[in-house]
Every structure is written in C-alpha cells, then in structure tokens.
Length: 495
Ligand SMILES: *Cc1c(COP(=O)(O)O)cnc(C)c1O
Image (cartoon, rainbow, N blue to C red; front, side, top):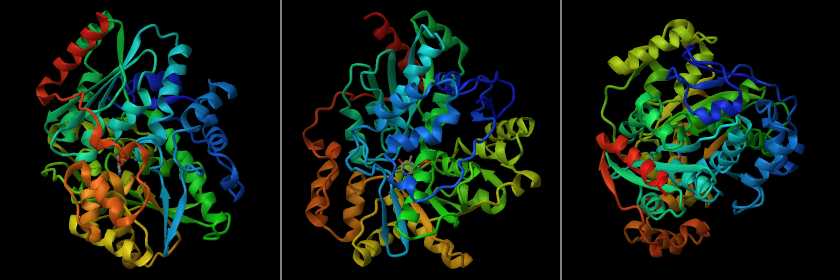
C-alpha cells in the first residue's frame, strides 16, 4: 500500500515512513492510494475478538508488516487497558445506538488509535532503519493530549511534548495532563486556543532549521494528532464492529444501510467512517455534528469554508476548532485526487482564512449531512435522554445526538443510525451534573458528585484525580512553543 500527499509535491511513502513522518514535507497529509474492500460484513464480525478484527481490517493498509508483527501491535494495544470485554460496546437507548468508544485508559475515543500508534511507531522505526529517536509533538483540544501521553508513556526511543490551551479544557482533562507520569513526557499549557497550538505545531513539523537542530541532538519530529495517518486507520475498525453489532442486536439485517453520526472537531473520526464506507461498509449518510463552532456545518451547507470567525469555548471543548485539518483529506478524495486544486485551496485558507469549493469537488460531498447544537441544547439533550432512557451521554456525544434528531426530523431519513459516543460523561462531570440537575462540587471533585447522582462506575483512570500531584505546571505564550521544544530536546539529549 502506497501513501501519497494531498498536495502532490511530496515523496510517496510506505505506511511506516508515513507514520514516522507525521505530515508530508509539502505541508499536505498522507492518504492511502486505494481502499481495500471489506466484503460482506455479517453478525460473526461481532463475535470476533477486537484484536482479530483489527488485524483483519487493517492488514491491507500495513503491507510491509508481517501478520505476526501486526498482530503483536494489536495485542499490545487492545489486550488490556480497556474496562469492558467488548472493547467498543454498542448500547441502544430508544432509537439511538451509541457506539461507546471511551472504555480505554484515558476515557475518550482517542485511545482507540493512540493505544496502537506507539506500537506502530516503534515497529516503523525498526523497519525504516531510523537511528534517531522520535520527538512527538502534540497539540490538543483536550483528549488527544492525555491519550498520547498514556500511549507513549515510557515507550523506548520516543519523547513526547504536549501543548494544550490552558483556559479551554475541562478541569478533568487539565488535571489528567498536568499530572501525567512517564519519564519521556513534557506538558505545557499555552495562552491561546487550540487553533493557535495546532498552527504552531504544524509549522514546527516542517521547520527545517528546527529539524536540523533536533537532528544534531539525535531526534526527528513526528505528530500524534490526526494529521498522522496512523491515527485514522485504527479508527476504521470500530465502525466495522459497530455495523456488525447492529446486525447482532437485530437493529438491521446484513447488507442494510446505516447512518453514522459523529461529533466532529478536527474531522478525523468521521473521516475514518468515510474510509470504512469507501471500503464497502453499507453506509448511507455520514452526519457531521458540530457545536457552536459551526464552521463545518456552514461548509457543508454552502461549500464555503470560512475561518474568519471567533472561536468559542463551549461545554464540548474537544470540538472547539475552527481550522479542521482532516477536511483536506476529504477534499482530496472528493476531487478524485486533484492535488493541484487542494494546494490552491489550502493556500487560500492560510492566506485569506477562507475558500470556496469548485462545484465538481462539492458534488463529491453528497455522502455527508451536517448540523450543529448549542450549549443549551446539549444540556437539554443529556437531561432528556437520561430521564427517558436512563442513558448518560457526555457533552460531545450529546452534540451528535441532538444533530441526529434534527437531521431525522428535517430529512425524514429514519435509517438506523450509529452515534459515535466519544467520551465518558465523567470527563465533563460539571456540565453533565448541571444537565441532569444534580448538585456538584467544582473542578475534578465533580466526578464524585456525578457518581453520587447517577451511580455509574467511575472509569478507573478518573477515580483518583483529586489526589494526583501536578508535575507539569508550566503555562507559556504560544510564541514560545518553539523555544520550549528546543529546551526540552537539549535537556533530554544531555542526559
Ligand atoms: C477529539 C474529540 C472529538 C472530535 O474528534 P475529531 O476526530 O477531532 O473530529 C469529539 N469528541 C471528543 C470527546 C473528542 O475527544
């Protein structure tokens, strides 16, 4: 399997090269050149253990990995560390089908890919004969940071540096990151928003001067954000599993179509669903759900991407994003691989913060529907679903639920739908307490308040947050990110 850049001016890569590199040298993103076909998915796929399923689905994308190598990676990722046997249970509440993707070690769906990526990264370094260690730069809107810290914690030959917007993550998210263990990790809060962090991070990844300095210290850079294709491929697996679980639960018959509704920020999770569809999964619509940062909703409605707007901090902070990286991959596929056009659009985006799609690319987006939910609607949805069905959603999942309800009403399309449930309600305990009318203490103590109110088991990684020690207490300006990276590299190199 060959991977090519969406901007057409970078060398084609094998999967291990693409994973090590993170982002293509022309600033584009790596995409697979073709999509292997899944064949018929029936209920037996729901009985398979997750490791075997992941191996089966992903094997064609990892052509230079042997079966045993890839299986070993899968075992390392999905063997333990998930707090339920099905790994990604499908839970129905009324007509809604929630695919719970948050049973991993940091209680958000990012674990599904970031538990696997360190294993892929280590194997890739060996395959490519890379002598330098990898310094992984991460910008996060909240959940990627912790999932990456956990995944790469004490992994040999890796060093991981995380930047998060200091005033725009939930108290639980902040405490998780600031107390992260591991001898190879550094975490910085930044004064700025997620877009600032992501822009600076992308610039560092293609900064030749910085790369030279790093090489002198024995390091090369990579990314653990969803700009890395190693993040997207593992996410295809759970959509296949979700589809099979829908058959097993009697919600659909084998071969019937489903819709998939995904709470979206950087567009990585929903792009993986699109990849599953390209591999032959019977999907009708992919419903892209946004919060009040509704740039994607406007985009799908108008064909115009307009990033000239303020970024709001909402109660679904992991989706507080204006420049959605993975949309570039979708546009590339929708244009039939027209790298020239994509380069032009992305240049326009960085210069004018706006572009308008040509009609031929727009026509390629007909698989998608979109909508957004306000903070108030999110709280109402959580309360309603809890009272009516005794099911508790986190704020991000609630965005998707509300957008799906609106979509159904607007379109009359009542095809059975999977809603990607992306985080444990405990990660956003204050707002979830508010939504169900429970009294709560502020900050991380709200986890206990929520437990008293709903009685649902607290995920183990969130159970002792109140007693954790803060080890990463630094907050810096966004203009100081590069200097921070240089300082960290020097300190590690001199050990
Ligand atoms: C990251 C995240 C999202 C958005 O996913 P993208 O792949 O960035 O679109 C939604 N919900 C939660 C809880 C997240 O952590």
